[in-house]
Image (cartoon, rainbow, N blue to C red):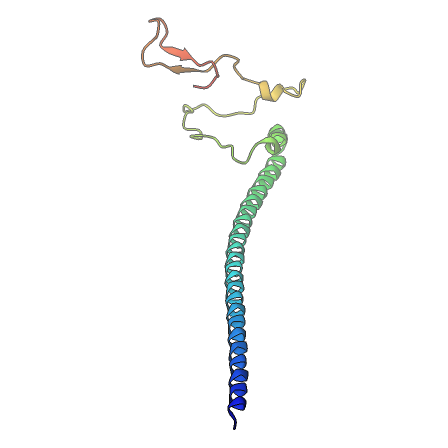
Length: 164
């Protein structure tokens, strides 16, 4: 082998080495880009999983609320049917039940009634559609007991908004 042949062969091998090094750098960049995309995909996957859990929890909450509302409606309907079946005494009550919120309730029940007093159905005539609503209602401001009279004459005060 001659010196020229060896030099040519070395030059060829150096070019091959440089080409391979360039290819290695390109492959390293591709690997880095692929790892970055994989990381983004894993992040999005976790985000979707969290959203799925959140929606599942919301769905469970809505199912519980639906069940509660259905029970309240069934109870209201059964009370309405019971009131209708008891006859004309409860007819006006049966007409009012759909208008009453399911959150309304009697506070302390009949604890405030004296012995011998009973709750009765008053005889009313339906001359006005509001006759049942305005029956036995006071038009005065409610009062509450004050700690000390302000002017020394009244032991109570009247609130302007009507609540004591």
